[in-house]
Length: 327
Ligand SMILES: [Mn+2]
Image (tube, rainbow, N blue to C red):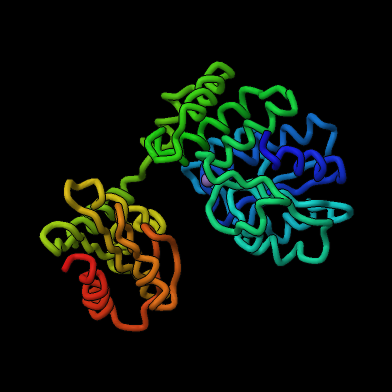
């Protein structure tokens, strides 16, 4: 049995009223986990509300079927009962990642408990429920619900399935395990429809986001014998396409689908003028070191930093920095 199960049992029995939250820019996994987890707490006779600092991105709005997720704001504040409330943090191991809500709750609540599957923050493993082998926070929440022998409604089954599909890239990413498929099978039995959820997540792009993608692909430069691709995302492209910056950022993963490409660089600028570099690699190319040397951060295969140079200088500099990998 995972020690997190005992931790969570104690935490739930010590409190009556809970606030559930997830990281800023919430994704399918965090949102799906919140919906099913709230149902669990309610079924145990507890009071529980979901409050996020950021609104639900349009593409994930289908997960909140009955509109139970509160967005933190002046209005949202009134819905939060701070008396004896305790916080659950889902899909991030750092409470500050839940955004403005965290600052508001600081010093006012009884404590927080993390349910997460990200690496790092090892000091938190003992007191929370952190399982880095899990494909998703939804997988952990499923385990918790089964452990307490509670029912999963079709609504929660759909929410958890959507989260797992999103966080595993449709059952492709490395943490997808036989267990992930067993859980998915059970969720389908309970009411999740794989085709309809796939359509909602992957066949729901706006025309504007496609136009932005076309502009970004047209900016593509191939370097180091086809091993590295650099793309640009500029305010001009955002204006021309009408798509939001966040949708452009996601295109960084596209070049890694090209045979032989092991590194994708995106130099990006939003309307605020700030220039940022994002780096993604496959295999043993540690870009976190380049990010840290420039005052940024990240992981071995995904990292970034803010640049103080102009746009073109930033592109040249990161190419030189990446060049060390391809000597
Ligand atoms: Mn996740």
